[in-house]
Image (tube, rainbow, N blue to C red; front, side, top):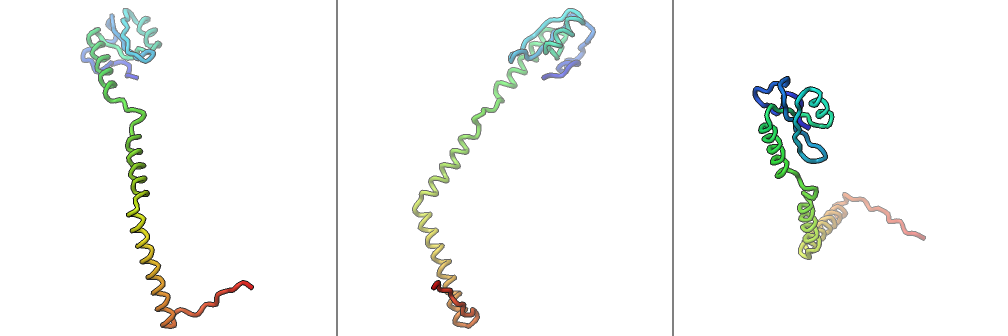
Length: 137
């Protein structure tokens, strides 16, 4: 919602001089109302006309600037779904790639062989004590 007086930064606006034109977003659309005295202005302010101008042209300019500012800059509620879809697509392509699984298998085999070699070396050097293996009876 826009600010109350002084409205829209209009230079030379006198809040005590009438008629005045008020603008407000009523029921989702911008509207302009003319007030000829304080009583009309107060009544219109209660309806949602909160920004007042000394001329109808200034009020129209403000409404048009508000409309143009909103037209191009409203974010879509679906903004970002395409990026989520791209991430899911990349994940699916990578998870179903056999080359990735083959590389992962070679990597795991290398780790297992490295650990087996270290354990055999430690047993041969008597660093690793013989551990009894429990056998169920």
